[in-house]
Length: 120
Image (cartoon, rainbow, N blue to C red):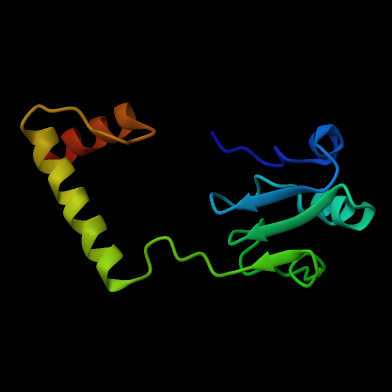
């Protein structure tokens, strides 16, 4: 299930004036127009983002707003992170094949079904 615009005008209006916002999870969680509006009226005192509704962002009014700090999403872009992800994934496949449950997987039952289908 994908959620869009969870942080919107309604949510901003219920927050303490000057609230600070950080989104390093998924683009689309924040209604970017609502964030710009919240910046402009002082409801949001600042935001730090590394994910956006459209990537790369096309409408630059949010990314260029003086109350917004934007960085690149670096989740697993280093060599060390890529190696760690590969090792963790391989270990989870081994664990699953040995009958252990998957740890930290949001859609575990779907992933388990697909992996078992391809392994056997």
